[in-house]
Image (cartoon, helix red, strand yellow):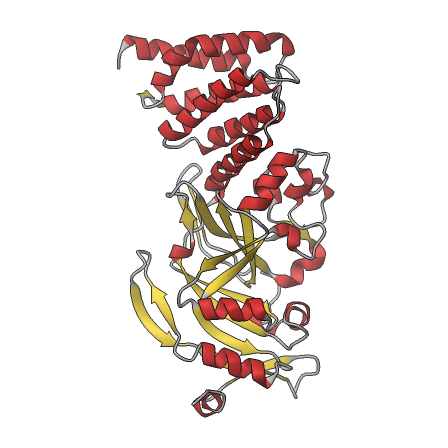
Length: 410
């Protein structure tokens, strides 16, 4: 450790101590001037450790202060100043091994600066906000499992059939969902470019699960939290017996319910610097503070909220972020992850025949954490029927090999 590096670290710490807090407009010029004049020295701190303190964290904190000051410096920011910030943020993102929070914040202000430039650049603003969301989602991805059971209800339409043929999962932007209060984070966004970045990059698949997603927490001491019943005070029906889900999402019992057993390779941690994917549970609330568009709310607290009227769904979601994402829809390969198909009470014979023929040679593969196949098993098929013993209830009847064979093409 050279004396110069130690001195640079002390200067960074003093800079953060002096200017952290509510931004005072009288200090903006000083913040901008000091950071620009010292940048070539301070940037050398990033790869080093100073006792218990990380150089990259100290620099990230200073970058947060600088980028925020630049955004608040003028209603029409000089292009050369934005280009300097762009290069600083890009270099920090490459050099710092961690500090996703500071990377996300810096890209947030960079995107805002492009929107407030003397000649606004919407494309560059959206690009910066996409990177803001990328690093934000890297912070959220704390899911840990070897295999995960999930159920999904679908109508027997062209999109469901295509997904079964291609062995893939259909994903949609949250703006296509049927709940006007869904994902309150979207309603709190007061930046057109950030909203567009969110719409393009984030796609979701919805499932029902009676148990919580297992998580691995890294804040403080590492701690694993195993899956637990979502409702500890009442016993939920099996996921495939939810009459309301059959009515609302499976074409009034004419569709199907798919039971998946996902392997851990469904989660992606951004190692390719563009894709992050993980599962998370929906939380149900009636508190308006989680929705109020006038309140700035964090994505961690608000993207996974729905109103209490939807609690019967026991929803868990698969969130997929793609830096190069476009449009409202996408797909994710899910090779050999289907464990069972449940045909609705009113599912037409022709739809059963088509699906059984698509899956006739398909297997469920059980995989280890490293992706290696442990075992293979046949996909199970069930036909739902009205429960003759309990009015308003349904039951799943296993299809025999003879019953299945009667539907298969010779």
